[in-house]
Amino acid sequence: MLTDHADPELLARARALLAEHPVVDGHNDLAWALRTQVGYDVDRRDLAADQSAYQHTDLARLRAGGVGAQFWSVFVPADYQGDRAVSATLEQIDCVRALADRYPGELRLTCTADEVEAARAQGRIASLMGAEGGHSIACSLATLRALYALGVRYLTLTHNDNVPWADSATDRPAAGGLTRFGEEVVREMNRLGMLVDLSHVSADTMRAALRTSRAPVIFSHSSARAVCDHPRNIPDDVLESLRANGGVAMATFVPKFVLPEAVAWTQAADENMRAHGLHPLDTTPAAMEVHRAFEAARPRPVATAATVADHLDHMRAVAGIDHLGLGGDFDGTAFTPAGLDDVSGYPNLIAELLGRGWSAADLAKLTWGNAVRVLREAERVAGELRRTERPSIATLEQLDGQDQVASA
Image (cartoon, rainbow, N blue to C red; front, side, top):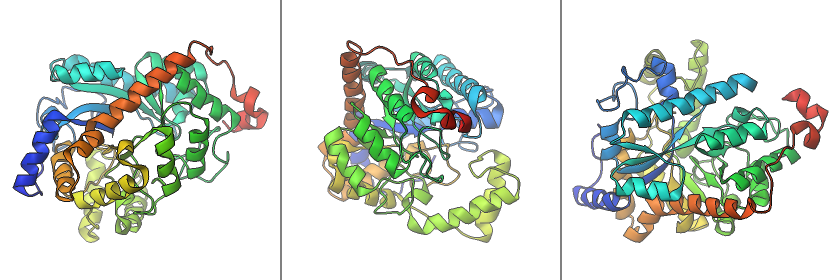
């Protein structure tokens, strides 16, 4: 478990606040870590035991961090396509469900705002699911509905690569934001009550989705581009538009997204991984040895809880306190800020914000209230839309033409 970095008095206040208003975290990649490290053999990564040697997450550290609800990412890489992407996503969903079954006294699988609130009342961690990347639906609205039926409550429209109907932040623009089929995906998500997640997408895709969506959107793990100029972050005009949309931007902790000095260093570290035949996002023990050797030879710039707080200060000024949340991206990154080393670190961030004059009421919105409100509002909108709209049977070919189908 990490060492506390905050003033003891502020840290005590932070922990008391989190006991009343725990964190709804927007993104945790534990399921993918379990897949790559142990092939989903949870006996080898028993979350009831200390797993700090292998991953950022276990039950004790979730409790220490004041996490009351977790969106578990059911991520699969973008080089998984078609049926392979769909089946791997189903395996990820199965992993999250298996964890909830294995630890029923600690975790409760939840799909609605009421269920999230009930889990907190029971002293359990509400476990929701989010699919990270539109490739997981293989250009099929029926597959989207199937994921929703299995409990997935957000879809990140892209991951690091474009999909045929939406542009990623880290790929060359092709769709100009959303295609007609991409707009239909957003509309069908609204009808279902599935949150539209705009982390990872291009700024044009963000704007197009905000124009299209009838429900609040989220950014499950993105910070402020004005503070750290990385394409994964949110421009100010988009942050400001959340006021009208009602959505929530959940600040992430990934150093290369929050600390400008870490951007170039991370690019070099990624190239080093590729030179060793490894994916830059690989966090298996062998991959981490390569990371650590690189870091020993070339020390990395270190982000802190204060770095993340700088983003939150800016995001509050632009978007307003009603539109902020937290999405750490734990177990989805090789490096974390000092003080936010793993899921037990949230009290350090809350203490930092208390020291900056954030009120208890504002912090309660940041940690819990805003995320639950957005989930509830998406459910309300879906209830209205389902009375007037049928499930869409539109296809990529019908809406975008044969050229888009050929590129899918």
